[in-house]
Image (cartoon, rainbow, N blue to C red; front, side, top):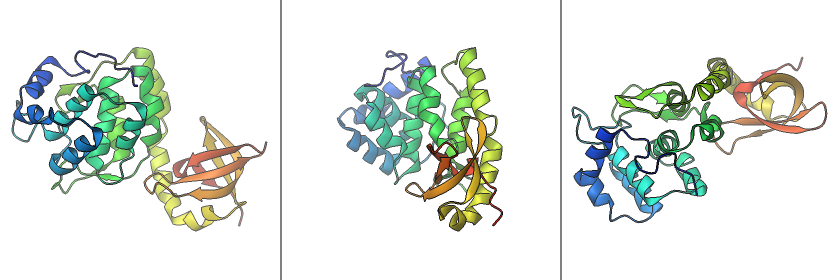
Amino acid sequence: PLEIANAKTFGFSPLLQTHIVESAHFKALLTLESLDQLVEEMCQFADNIEPYVQNSSTTPSALFCCLYRLFTLGCDRRQLGRLVDNTDNAYVRCAGFLFIRFGLQPDQLWPLLGEYILDDEVLRPQKESDWHTSIGEFVEGLLTKDKYYNVVLPRLPRSTRINLENKLAGVAQYRKRAKANLDLLEVYREEGVRVEANVDGEWRPCVTMELIEDVISRLKVLVRMEDDTEETVHLGKVILTDRR
């Protein structure tokens, strides 16, 4: 089971919590007793990522009603993984990320969210909107901002903030490099190509072993270091150095 930082409020402001528990949608959700039912509900009714429905400051969105029901149902690490790695619906993934940011201890944020910072799956804040962002940028916003739309996020200790700033310092560059490396996928599929990989913040010479393509929005390269150890590195953290 995951340890919830505040089992009484789940990190929600008193006003948002009141609006949710008094809403007709949330009361209807009380009949749902499994994660599968809740995921189905999100797929059917969640059409945006905001806390409230459009043009209202009192009616909570379907996504946030489902998110709150998820807290009251309880969620273990395996179930949370099913949410954040959902391949059918980006809003279901957002519910998982929001569960982490609102509900869990600050020291759990990077271990659970860091993997998704460079995830380039397209995310439309509203189903019909022309503008879009990416899952990675959505997660980055959860880690760097004090508010989610007009809702205050649980406060992070100063030490956690500094640590996150250090971890996120190179993200813009990694995203650019990942985009450029998409043109070189055939090269990274080859074995024995010389590259440099960023491992724990340090650029190290190594050679490619294979391109890992099981998650299309987070392509990775398996590399072998000079000391024969192997590392799996995101495509944005690899530089081609082979003279060929």
